[in-house]
Amino acid sequence: MPVRLRPLRDDEFDAWVEHGKAEYARDMIENAGAPPAQAREKAESDWQTLLPQRVETPDQFIYAVEDESGARVGSVWFARRETQFEGAVAFVYEIEIDEQFRGRGFGREAMLLLEDEARARGLARMSLNVFGGNEVARNLYRSLGYAESAVWMAKQLGDSQS
Image (cartoon, rainbow, N blue to C red):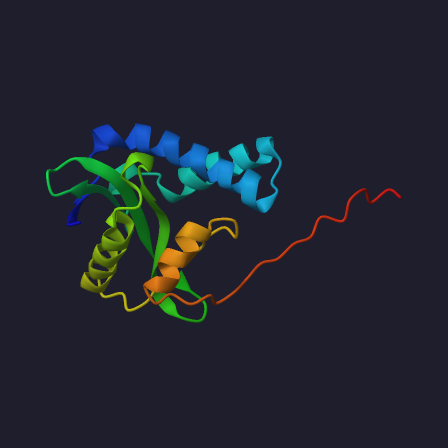
């Protein structure tokens, strides 16, 4: 299914941020064991820190994903980030295909277009973080040639008072 990326408009930004913060907090709660209040606080802080100038924030690239008819089916967000070991990379903060459009290849196509966008900006490497419980996303990334470079594991030990 052909898709295209278009820059997110400022009038779409607030709704996109609110949805993104809620999903990020939910992921931290469900997949990283974060307490709800702390997850919401971290989501709020991270989004404010990363996007202080909204869609005009330098080195932050936010796109609406549209199908061939121009209908919005999702969004993607990546940033140019400097890393200690790899230099500048494209870091994917979000790729989300709206639930009613999932399973049609939009995510795969959007990722390939995102890779093109990163290359066009002179970035030769793309990296991302995915929570362990998100097997659909992990399988998509693996099928596109992404390899795990670190795995954070945890185990709940129960009551530490006993």
